[in-house]
Image 1 (tube, helix red, strand yellow):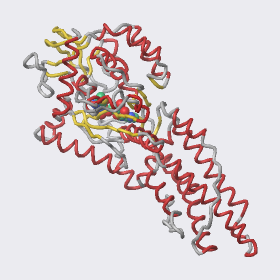
Image 2 (image 1 turned 90 degrees about the horizontal axis):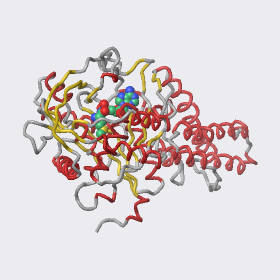
Image 3 (image 1 turned 90 degrees about the vertical axis):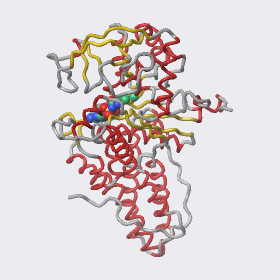
Image 4 (image 1 turned 45 degrees about the horizontal axis):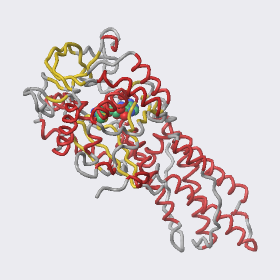
Amino acid sequence: MSQPKSDKKNNFYITTPIYYINDKAHIGHAYTTITADVLARYHRGLGDEVLFATGTDENSQKTVQAAEKVGQDIVSYTDEMALKWQETWERLGVNVDVFIRTTEERHKTAVYEMLDKLKKSDDIYEGLYEGLYCVGCEEFKRPDDLVEGKCQEHNQIPELIKEKNHFFRLSKYADQIKDHIKKNPDFISPVSRKNEILSFIEQGLDDISVTRESVEWGIPFPDSEGEVLYVWIDALTNYLTVTGYPSDGYDRWWPADIHVVGKNIIKFHCIIWPAMLMSAGLPLPKQILAHGFLNVGGTKISKSLGNAIDPIDLANDYGNDALRFLLLRIVPFGDDGDFTMEHFKALYNAELANDLGNLVQRTVKMIERYQGGSVGPLKEAAHDVKEYHDAMKGFRFDRALEHVWVVIKSTNQYLEEEKPWSIDEPEAEHRREVLAYCVSNLVHIAQLLTPFMPDTSKKIIDIFSDEKVTNPGILFPRLD
Ligand code: MSP
């Protein structure tokens, strides 16, 4: 029996885009996945049952080209790269529930079911596509998408292709999508992205190709030999595959609560995907959450420029939690941000080594020195967490962290004012209370930081979970 609908409010299904495997992950991809992981962990903390999915988009021309380039057969290449991506997320402390690969059989099943539904709605027809295609974007382009004849994203002249293929009646759903966006103010977040999509729909929607004839690698189109499914139609359906669709019980998780995506792929998620779901008679995801792009030192991250930073290198050098914290701290969600090592190190020293690391170390040290390591009874401190939760629910992770840092800084300040190191023995109980107050603040801080810095938070909570404190050593060694 599938779960009754009234339980749905406790289920929280969140996804990242599934990534192309022509290269390894860089900090831009890590930014997306870590953001989604923070939300997933936050919801687990609220008591929700969470399904967090990420994966790899393998049926792309880019896969074929990349395998050719390294002279590897495509199947072993995809296996190797998919594993690499999976290991990257594990290394970065990302708690994935389902990792989906589009070359899996279960995915094909979901895709064929979706395709059947589209056909039954009479939304698939045969035609001829004559026009431009950018393999970098895996996207059909209109001349007005280009600047001086080039795709801006990839700085490349798209291919001119002419092929027989099958189309999906996207145009039919323009009004319905527009209505949905207007009636569901949170469907596309932030508002700037919603407006971008609305004005795009305003210009009219063309039907789109859902198959490719000149391409061999992909899910075969069952009705016409020699055609494979257009990779985006295949890729978007992954969000259903993850729920077990079309098996019974998939609606325990579908519709998804949040698709986290970068701003570059909102048209696919806010127009094509909703139209496919409408045609298939399935409910739409509740929210598409689009973030901005990270640049490196003011320059777009690009393979050809060789400026991509490997998040694993950063995690190895500075710690996993430091990377997670700094990525979300650096940029107000939704905006583009600039990543530089100088800024990264400055924030690390100021906020992790000085503010947080010091508070932990000095509190533990004083408890060891003055009280033989035992804290004694804690007073339940009243903490106002509304601001933090409002920020988390509004995806303002920078503000949520700011709120936590106010508590950290004021606790450091409190120590400066109370000076437990100059309290004399007759006042030992007062000194103990001062330190106990710091401990209760630290536990509170660790709880709020759990979604962002799971390992550090656990370490802090563990320090105080026994009779006597256990000194974890320096949490964030200062960088020169
Ligand atoms: N395979 C498609 C997505 C299919 S989803 C059904 C794809 N893959 S991708 O590997 O190119 O990854 C795209 C996503 O990675 C972006 O939408 C964004 O979330 C993330 N980012 C890639 N570069 C980024 C930055 N420089 N900055 C921030 N995010 C970046 O598109």
